[in-house]
Amino acid sequence: MPSTSRRLVLFDIDGTLITDGGAAREAFAEGLAEVYGFRGDVRRYDFSGRTDPQIAAMILRDADWDDAGIEARLPALWNRYLAGLARNAPGRVRALAGVVALLDRARADERLTLALLTGNIEPGARLKLGAIALNGYFPFGAFGSDSPRREELPPVAVERAAAMTGVEFRGADVVIIGDSIYDVRCGVPHGATTIAIASGKTPAEKLRAENPHHFFDSAEDLDGILAAIKL
Image 1 (spheres, one colour):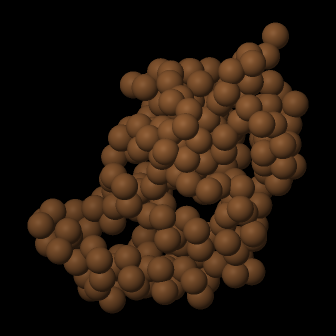
Image 2 (cartoon, rainbow, N blue to C red):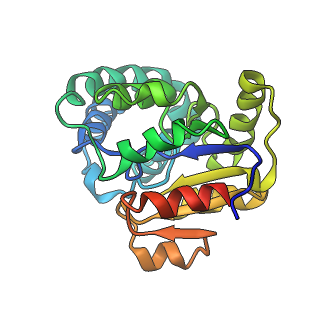
């Protein structure tokens, strides 16, 4: 029987809600080249589930940048990245199958509070979602600009939810939905309910090996996902 208690439902973005058609990766490459002089191939790096600061550090450490040097130029990188993303995203971002219907049904349930939990820096997240008019589903969230460590983001979202709704969500009443192993892992220390959807680049068997509370092949399983959220 579904629970009658309220749920905070935290959605990842890339590979869970949308695909951006390479818009962000291209903007990242342009920013890294302009700000750090990096000319390597960013396509060989796995961005899935990582925060934007982690992605920058992963690539630049590989190019022998130290952490102090990376950190000093991050503001310039983000400015350049966002300019590129604003140019690239329109016409390339699209919602994944089932996502809009899932969001519509979830938003219509007064027991559910929808928010974001994403590795994107907040302005980048809003540019991506804004390209296909999805920002309105998510009045707040926790972002890679709040912390480079994804496991530190659930408490940020919980705190913002309390400020907005007056409800202190705890443990399994916080539901994290994502397509990567890091989406699942970030919920474990906080006792959150984890829902893995194999709609991104992570193979289904790899996601299953993380033992999420619930697993789905795509967001098209609307009834199954909504039932899992409300358990």
